[in-house]
Image 1 (tube, rainbow, N blue to C red):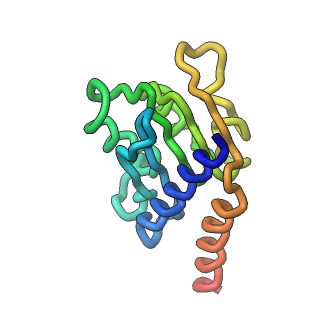
Image 2: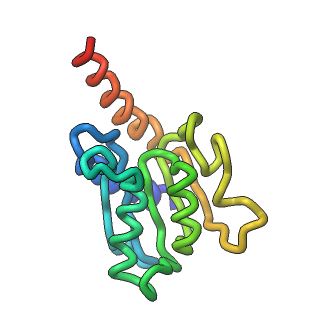
Length: 155
């Protein structure tokens, strides 16, 4: 299973490259139960001027047009380069995603185990399986490099 998780995170890393140039490069991929890619996206919050244009939300929206009953993504997996925030974790849960795989933990805003654990809250009726820390160093390096380049330009 670990190889499959690494394959999914590698796909999410590739998706991060589609983030807008001013956006933090985070990528997300949604696959169906057979591992077939339904959607991928990079962050576009800055590019689109949309506070909800996180990679996860964009990928969920796109996947929902191709799978399920219009919004339920039962049996699907979402892979994300960085631990989802509270908004994205909520959207993932509401979409009925079966499994969440992510790369680097995000101790400042992470809502899948770091700061909060939205998806595994026992009060919720739907709790997907979660696997974090997959290719964490590679995923963290993308974000670190992005911010280092921004500091160099402003510096």
